[in-house]
Image (tube, rainbow, N blue to C red):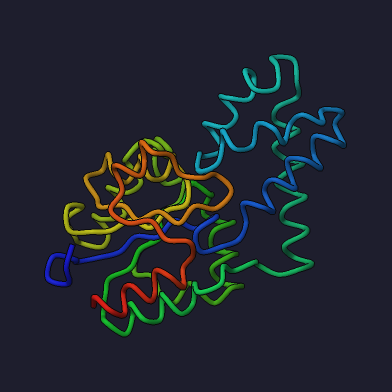
Length: 221
């Protein structure tokens, strides 16, 4: 996809712009430890990129039907929030620079995240990244979460761009599948979960980090 074909870029949040997947893993591990379920963190890779409703639906299979799923989700959410309040919102290296560059090229930008609205806006406000986005779509604003394509279709609609002329920047397989199913071109920057030969055959580009993506865009745009 060249400059003339590109009309907008849609970023995932957690694991892509925010270094929160590691925070999420820690919260699952700590919540599991406190609730007598030390294996909880082993299930975390399966839920990365999914919305809260989907995660709750998966938990009976992942942790057993008798496990207190709602209290677990509430505890891991509180633990993650409290740590973020103490230590600040962890922003990925290169995030501000790549957003600043795209903004300087007047590229329409959106955020599409399975995280709910209040938590997303907290992260955008306290990181200073909110000013870059013309549209923000969160997990509680759609009926189905990633890997369903709905969230990316809505993001493109709000930007006023065709999915066929937009790029999604993602870290997780669920997010990549969501963007591809929406008809977008996908860029992957793996975080906790590595790519696979299957995904590599479907994505447009793969980068080690956001700084590498920035260097590519500086050459092409």
